[in-house]
Image (cartoon, rainbow, N blue to C red):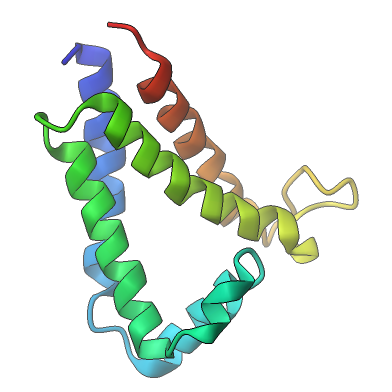
Length: 132
């Protein structure tokens, strides 16, 4: 693994893993709020039980973070996992009019927390296409 890949995977993996760990055991009300927001980007999540959805999100983030942090996982697989994850987050960003300015691209104040997920999409792309 190259140093640049280790940096991309290490920092991003630690961030995503921590996010997933913090969501374990989230209360039903918190899971419902997260689910409602997630449904703006991926409407099918509304069909899940809120507690099941909360566990799904937590353990998905833990799995993606661990995948990025595990050196024996090929960078393309780790990048693809991160790419799918960041695509879901960006879908919420672009499909929620409150997240963007009137042009539908630039983030509003409310959208800043999701707009940064474009960096994860870029990191995923770098991991998938790098030839080192």
